[in-house]
Image (cartoon, rainbow, N blue to C red; front, side, top):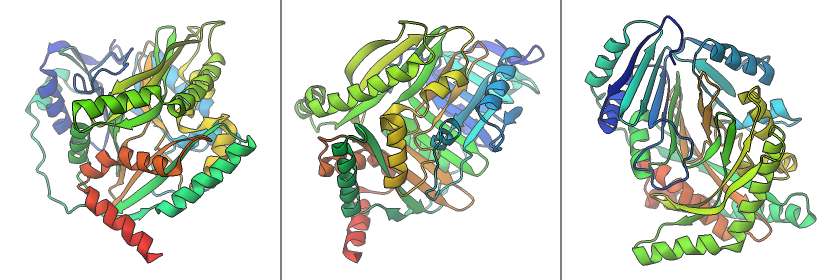
Length: 454
């Protein structure tokens, strides 16, 4: 469906997906506002990606948008999205984790390392859709055929060889372990059953964002990757996790809880995978979040339609094994994207249970404002279908101030072993650090220097 009745479109142009992906990434470098969403097919592996309709999409430039003004609450965002959809337009954008404060009586008072807008939704000037070797290009101005030619002829921007960023801040291990013990006290009192605790890593230095994105997705070609630029702010993301997706009257969520490393050989790799599959701790974490997601979706679902399509599925990614469950429901045709967001955001895999109390304790136990990390980016099509990820396994970059932020976390339950939880977060950070040129030796040298300084 075209973006409007007056738009030019090139429909069903045969392309080589891999070559066209590279050309498109070269092309988007000239724009100050772009969102590129990539399923990384066929490299992402056998993950449960039911409902992915496109190999990759690019929303380029801004035709119109609803900005992060305080008065733009969920109702106004909903009105904007629905108005644009009725005009046959696609809408792209994001919600940061801190959007929770507009949905519940919560606060985010910890300092923010970067200032990505809390919310942003926009209709692009140019839309590129690629699926099964076919490309569609839509544009509000100019010739879509000419844009296609520009994409195919786009030259790679010359890379500058910046030194590796300098690590500036990371939680020291002692503080991390002490915090887990504090969370265990809340678990023991029954305040919560599970809590997702995260920590942040800050680095400084110049970065070539698209080069970092290419490196990250080569290391970890996950199915919900995103390259997102809003002026001087960048998100470089290779997420394995879907937050929420809609196809027709069916809504799907796929929380991840449970991570294991890949083995050095087929025997050890299978051992790690089977240990994850049989882990009572990981299964307990996973089922708690499945119950939470079922409860969230029940707020908008048709009666008796909430289902657990798969429980404790173990899937293999290039760097890790993950335990993924799938929960779905049916909704009325009148149910909007924002109706579902109000019911399900933030995603339970990044909060814990019960959700409100877990978020209150997250604010007390963490020392940074999550912002776009553990938020969501994605698209809404004119027919009301949508697909949004969970922003994890990501790098954020403020190009104006040369600040780089990473974060990682995991679910803490009463049976969590603090040392193991810490090691899991380092495993999750490894591809992002490598994409930045920060070696494992550099990381541990920095951490050890902090420990000795104390």
